Length: 213
Ligand code: SF4
Image (cartoon, rainbow, N blue to C red):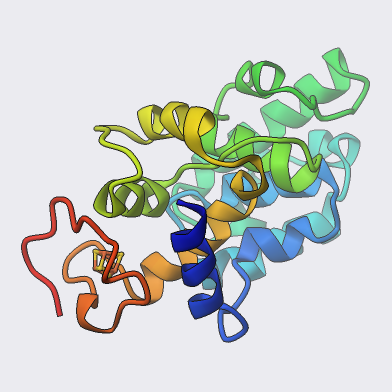
Protein backbone atom coordinates (compact mmCIF):
# COMPACT_ATOMS: atom_id res chain seq x y z
CA UNK A 1 0.00 0.00 0.00
CA UNK A 2 2.73 2.46 0.99
CA UNK A 3 4.87 1.85 -2.05
CA UNK A 4 1.93 2.28 -4.45
CA UNK A 5 0.96 5.51 -2.70
CA UNK A 6 4.55 6.76 -2.85
CA UNK A 7 4.64 6.14 -6.57
CA UNK A 8 1.32 7.90 -7.11
CA UNK A 9 2.44 10.82 -4.92
CA UNK A 10 5.60 11.25 -7.00
CA UNK A 11 3.54 10.98 -10.20
CA UNK A 12 1.02 13.69 -9.24
CA UNK A 13 3.81 15.56 -7.45
CA UNK A 14 4.90 19.03 -8.23
CA UNK A 15 2.67 19.67 -11.23
CA UNK A 16 -0.52 19.21 -9.24
CA UNK A 17 -2.40 22.31 -8.19
CA UNK A 18 -3.26 22.29 -4.50
CA UNK A 19 -6.94 21.72 -3.86
CA UNK A 20 -8.95 24.72 -2.70
CA UNK A 21 -9.41 23.34 0.82
CA UNK A 22 -5.73 22.42 0.99
CA UNK A 23 -4.74 25.99 0.16
CA UNK A 24 -6.99 27.33 2.94
CA UNK A 25 -5.75 24.66 5.34
CA UNK A 26 -2.16 25.89 5.07
CA UNK A 27 -3.22 28.49 7.60
CA UNK A 28 -3.87 25.61 10.05
CA UNK A 29 -6.96 27.42 11.32
CA UNK A 30 -9.73 24.91 12.03
CA UNK A 31 -12.56 27.41 11.50
CA UNK A 32 -11.26 28.36 8.04
CA UNK A 33 -10.89 24.69 7.09
CA UNK A 34 -14.41 23.94 8.33
CA UNK A 35 -15.93 26.81 6.34
CA UNK A 36 -13.96 26.03 3.16
CA UNK A 37 -14.82 22.33 3.36
CA UNK A 38 -18.54 22.98 3.70
CA UNK A 39 -18.44 25.37 0.73
CA UNK A 40 -16.46 22.81 -1.31
CA UNK A 41 -19.05 20.03 -1.06
CA UNK A 42 -20.55 19.36 -4.52
CA UNK A 43 -18.77 22.44 -5.80
CA UNK A 44 -16.01 22.88 -8.36
CA UNK A 45 -12.61 23.65 -6.92
CA UNK A 46 -12.35 26.86 -8.96
CA UNK A 47 -15.54 28.12 -7.30
CA UNK A 48 -14.43 27.17 -3.75
CA UNK A 49 -11.10 28.82 -4.47
CA UNK A 50 -12.84 32.19 -4.83
CA UNK A 51 -15.95 31.78 -2.64
CA UNK A 52 -14.27 30.59 0.57
CA UNK A 53 -11.72 33.44 0.85
CA UNK A 54 -14.45 35.94 -0.09
CA UNK A 55 -16.65 34.82 2.81
CA UNK A 56 -13.74 34.44 5.23
CA UNK A 57 -12.57 37.98 4.46
CA UNK A 58 -15.92 39.26 5.74
CA UNK A 59 -16.41 36.67 8.50
CA UNK A 60 -13.02 35.32 9.66
CA UNK A 61 -14.31 34.10 13.05
CA UNK A 62 -17.35 32.21 14.36
CA UNK A 63 -18.41 35.42 16.11
CA UNK A 64 -18.45 37.41 12.87
CA UNK A 65 -20.12 34.57 10.93
CA UNK A 66 -22.86 34.23 13.55
CA UNK A 67 -23.78 37.89 13.03
CA UNK A 68 -24.11 37.69 9.22
CA UNK A 69 -27.60 37.25 7.78
CA UNK A 70 -27.86 33.98 5.79
CA UNK A 71 -28.77 35.93 2.64
CA UNK A 72 -25.44 37.80 2.86
CA UNK A 73 -23.52 34.54 3.36
CA UNK A 74 -25.36 33.06 0.38
CA UNK A 75 -24.39 36.02 -1.80
CA UNK A 76 -20.76 35.77 -0.72
CA UNK A 77 -20.45 32.04 -1.53
CA UNK A 78 -22.52 32.09 -4.74
CA UNK A 79 -22.25 30.11 -7.12
CA UNK A 80 -21.22 27.25 -4.79
CA UNK A 81 -23.59 24.29 -5.02
CA UNK A 82 -26.58 24.53 -2.64
CA UNK A 83 -25.37 27.98 -1.59
CA UNK A 84 -28.60 28.90 0.24
CA UNK A 85 -28.60 25.70 2.33
CA UNK A 86 -24.87 26.06 3.01
CA UNK A 87 -25.41 29.65 4.16
CA UNK A 88 -27.94 28.44 6.75
CA UNK A 89 -25.60 25.62 7.80
CA UNK A 90 -22.60 27.93 8.17
CA UNK A 91 -24.48 30.41 10.30
CA UNK A 92 -26.05 27.67 12.46
CA UNK A 93 -22.59 26.14 13.05
CA UNK A 94 -21.11 29.54 13.94
CA UNK A 95 -23.92 30.21 16.41
CA UNK A 96 -23.51 26.79 18.05
CA UNK A 97 -19.75 27.34 18.25
CA UNK A 98 -20.35 30.62 20.06
CA UNK A 99 -23.11 29.30 22.32
CA UNK A 100 -21.68 25.91 23.30
CA UNK A 101 -17.95 25.91 22.55
CA UNK A 102 -16.73 29.41 23.37
CA UNK A 103 -16.05 30.00 19.67
CA UNK A 104 -13.60 27.09 19.43
CA UNK A 105 -13.96 24.39 16.76
CA UNK A 106 -13.95 20.91 18.40
CA UNK A 107 -10.83 18.81 17.86
CA UNK A 108 -12.45 15.37 18.00
CA UNK A 109 -14.34 13.39 15.36
CA UNK A 110 -17.32 12.93 17.67
CA UNK A 111 -17.39 16.63 18.56
CA UNK A 112 -17.37 17.65 14.90
CA UNK A 113 -19.93 15.06 13.80
CA UNK A 114 -22.39 16.48 16.34
CA UNK A 115 -22.88 19.55 14.12
CA UNK A 116 -25.73 19.42 11.62
CA UNK A 117 -24.27 19.52 8.11
CA UNK A 118 -20.91 18.05 9.12
CA UNK A 119 -20.33 14.53 7.76
CA UNK A 120 -17.33 12.26 8.15
CA UNK A 121 -15.49 13.77 5.17
CA UNK A 122 -15.76 17.30 6.55
CA UNK A 123 -14.99 16.20 10.11
CA UNK A 124 -11.87 14.30 9.03
CA UNK A 125 -10.63 17.23 6.94
CA UNK A 126 -11.01 19.65 9.84
CA UNK A 127 -9.27 17.19 12.13
CA UNK A 128 -6.36 16.53 9.79
CA UNK A 129 -5.91 19.85 7.97
CA UNK A 130 -7.15 22.16 10.70
CA UNK A 131 -5.85 20.49 13.84
CA UNK A 132 -3.05 18.32 12.41
CA UNK A 133 -4.55 15.31 14.21
CA UNK A 134 -4.86 11.79 12.82
CA UNK A 135 -7.80 11.12 10.56
CA UNK A 136 -8.50 9.75 7.09
CA UNK A 137 -10.63 11.80 4.77
CA UNK A 138 -12.34 9.46 2.33
CA UNK A 139 -14.21 11.09 -0.51
CA UNK A 140 -15.40 9.59 -3.78
CA UNK A 141 -11.84 9.56 -5.29
CA UNK A 142 -10.20 7.87 -2.30
CA UNK A 143 -13.04 5.34 -2.11
CA UNK A 144 -12.96 4.50 -5.84
CA UNK A 145 -9.18 4.26 -6.23
CA UNK A 146 -8.62 2.32 -2.98
CA UNK A 147 -11.06 -0.29 -4.29
CA UNK A 148 -9.56 -0.39 -7.79
CA UNK A 149 -6.08 -0.84 -6.38
CA UNK A 150 -7.29 -3.65 -4.12
CA UNK A 151 -6.48 -1.79 -0.86
CA UNK A 152 -10.07 -2.39 0.27
CA UNK A 153 -13.22 -4.11 -0.92
CA UNK A 154 -16.01 -1.86 0.28
CA UNK A 155 -19.30 -0.39 -0.84
CA UNK A 156 -19.27 3.03 0.79
CA UNK A 157 -16.70 5.74 1.62
CA UNK A 158 -17.49 5.29 5.33
CA UNK A 159 -16.64 1.56 5.09
CA UNK A 160 -13.45 2.44 3.21
CA UNK A 161 -12.46 4.81 6.00
CA UNK A 162 -12.98 2.10 8.62
CA UNK A 163 -10.82 -0.42 6.72
CA UNK A 164 -8.10 2.15 5.99
CA UNK A 165 -8.02 3.11 9.68
CA UNK A 166 -7.01 -0.51 10.39
CA UNK A 167 -4.61 -1.09 7.50
CA UNK A 168 -3.14 2.20 6.28
CA UNK A 169 0.24 3.15 7.79
CA UNK A 170 -0.25 6.27 9.91
CA UNK A 171 2.10 8.45 7.85
CA UNK A 172 -0.40 8.17 4.98
CA UNK A 173 -3.53 9.06 6.96
CA UNK A 174 -3.39 12.78 6.26
CA UNK A 175 -1.80 12.89 2.76
CA UNK A 176 -3.85 10.07 1.16
CA UNK A 177 -6.72 12.44 0.39
CA UNK A 178 -4.65 15.03 -1.46
CA UNK A 179 -2.70 12.38 -3.35
CA UNK A 180 -5.66 10.29 -4.52
CA UNK A 181 -7.92 13.26 -5.26
CA UNK A 182 -5.22 14.73 -7.52
CA UNK A 183 -4.65 11.31 -9.11
CA UNK A 184 -8.40 10.74 -9.54
CA UNK A 185 -8.85 14.05 -11.28
CA UNK A 186 -5.99 13.68 -13.70
CA UNK A 187 -5.51 9.96 -14.25
CA UNK A 188 -7.73 7.43 -12.49
CA UNK A 189 -11.07 9.06 -13.23
CA UNK A 190 -14.44 7.43 -12.65
CA UNK A 191 -15.33 6.53 -16.25
CA UNK A 192 -12.23 5.61 -18.20
CA UNK A 193 -8.99 5.52 -16.20
CA UNK A 194 -5.69 5.98 -18.04
CA UNK A 195 -4.32 2.54 -17.14
CA UNK A 196 -1.87 2.37 -20.08
CA UNK A 197 0.25 5.16 -18.62
CA UNK A 198 -0.38 4.52 -14.93
CA UNK A 199 2.56 4.58 -12.48
CA UNK A 200 1.04 1.66 -10.54
CA UNK A 201 -0.38 -0.23 -13.50
CA UNK A 202 1.72 -3.32 -12.76
CA UNK A 203 0.45 -3.73 -9.20
CA UNK A 204 -3.13 -2.48 -9.57
CA UNK A 205 -5.93 -5.07 -9.24
CA UNK A 206 -8.10 -2.85 -11.51
CA UNK A 207 -11.04 -4.08 -9.52
CA UNK A 208 -14.31 -3.01 -11.17
CA UNK A 209 -12.58 -1.38 -14.16
CA UNK A 210 -14.44 -2.34 -17.34
CA UNK A 211 -13.17 0.38 -19.67
CA UNK A 212 -9.81 2.11 -19.71
CA UNK A 213 -7.43 4.06 -21.89
FE1 SF4 B 1 -6.40 3.51 -11.83
FE2 SF4 B 1 -5.89 2.01 -13.96
FE3 SF4 B 1 -3.88 3.00 -12.51
FE4 SF4 B 1 -5.40 1.06 -11.51
S1 SF4 B 1 -4.07 0.89 -13.34
S2 SF4 B 1 -4.74 2.92 -10.44
S3 SF4 B 1 -7.39 1.58 -12.36
S4 SF4 B 1 -5.35 4.20 -13.72
